[in-house]
Length: 510
Image 1 (cartoon, rainbow, N blue to C red):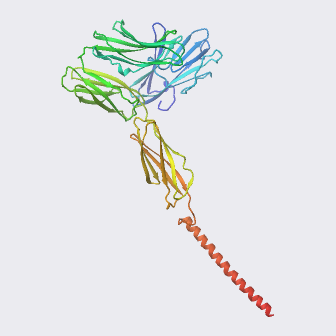
Image 2 (cartoon, rainbow, N blue to C red; image 1 turned 90 degrees about the vertical axis):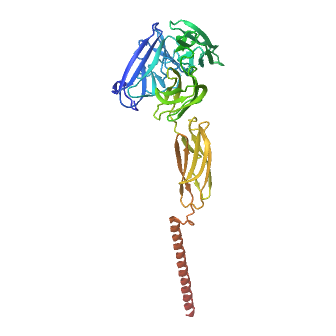
Image 3 (cartoon, rainbow, N blue to C red; image 1 turned 45 degrees about the horizontal axis):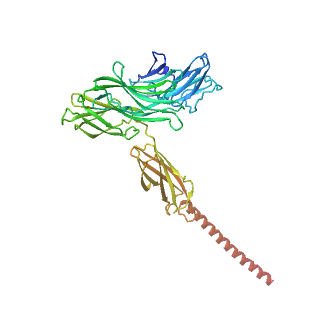
């Protein structure tokens, strides 16, 4: 909790409850953990749940189900499938681990696949975590996982839920787009859809595709337009996947209200090309807003992000596409958020929803290549490459790179960031008048959302004799002292020679 690990029962400013749902046919059990922020400030929550299996009557063996969960088998008793992700009834986990030691480990992650083997040591525990969950004061989050009776391996379903509206009429279609995949050969898997009326009677149905899993095919895409029922009222749309031979079924359901054609204003939203956004970034999308009954009267459109109104504007009543914009709040945590767009003619309200993903802004990094750790001479031209890494290509799509020699700008270059990694060739020349033995080299990179810098120091060789620096003057003084000493020695030598000549002359006279 906010970086401190503790038993959730010890968190006095958090509420915690567990709800267990048993299927009426005893096929599955869903365990839901709800955490409520009872404090006055936002809380960042990482929740880890551990299943201690060592107290079971029978030994437990297990195998991993890729991107899904675990298959657990108790000797002489039964088997269960633990579902942890990629299912509409559970909350996708962020990390998981398992072990054969007696005590479970919390908040760890294990990428290893646990394969079923009769000779494999029985596992003692399984733990799984939900990370980086933010809860506003007075709000709650629910985190769920599921146990399914025996072997449960349905094809995994990816569905563009933003295309399925809660409201429609006979002049519109229900768009179902996505894909399903399964990895185990040679099972035959399929996907389909059904529309049920208020009495749960199937009134329409269709196929979304079918294939036999092989090395060449493990997935299938679908994109179908469904004509809605003709009678007004409330219906339920089911989109499902099914594994033949295992009897494993997965489905998502959507409530759809069918209205008269001119009951309320209509909206059509063009999906954004961006895969994600970051805090404080701008979300822009196109939408048409029109109402056949309102003539030329303007309509009022509003945009809601995470249940808060973020934009409102008057728009012309036409099928022409209009631009809508809003800013993601700076303090928005990473995750998936609902965007709701409404349009009203003053009487009825039309609504469309879609989901966007928010990711934390990745801090850009800068490196010198190669490292400038040599000793350089005055007048040298130094070449190197600035390696800049920033995966936020949607927003940090342009770099302005400035090179500084000490405090002076030597070069400024603009580069596009298309792939997240940019290599910018740079160079500078050491002044011939440089008097210092070191210099600071700095790179400053500015993007539309942030700025960062990287610096290093280089060594510069100086000729100490010719230098006018302090050390050069000392050297010059020492040289002068040596010259004076040589002169004195020369004078002494001459005197010595003169004395010797005088001595010789006196000796000859004798």
